[in-house]
Image (cartoon, rainbow, N blue to C red):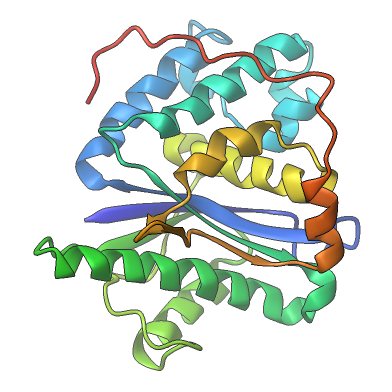
Length: 259
């Protein structure tokens, strides 16, 4: 079974942001332990006695709020880089899926539904492609606990049994599962993925996006894991971004066995 961990960034009804992002990554069920065990040592840097109390959350890490208050920016940035760098492990074959919607282009009550349709249908196609390669797999979507929980479960059931714009979800094992992000390192990784994609589209900060971009799901040489509904003005703005004055550092080398 393949697990798709998802989180959102930029609330669909929040007038202070222009974009809504639903994003995360898929990983084979037997490889989740390695990812978790690779993130835990990063948490130990900030609380050696109780690393499980450390929660990696994109917005509060960048702002230095809550538990991240008083921690030097360089240390917070290095943690972000080291966690996002785990996407690059070639043996894990992590694939990133994301829906980005410029909120002015869609009625706010349709944004969540369209976002979930975009991501779930591409993940379903990915599972279908494995079936054609004689590797039948089911999928399960895992979200952070959210106010969207009931709506997303209803949408998943509807897409599976009634259909969506391009067909039905045929390879999902169950409706989405919802976990407390404090208890799941992989939900925290999905949070960082969603947040840094949001930062790119909202603020033109491409530092985290550059670490994520190579791992968007591709099929037959075409990138299809990033589904965008954005204006031509946004596309033009993103194509002419200046170099960031504070580039991200290189990842810290891993000192543990590969999965």
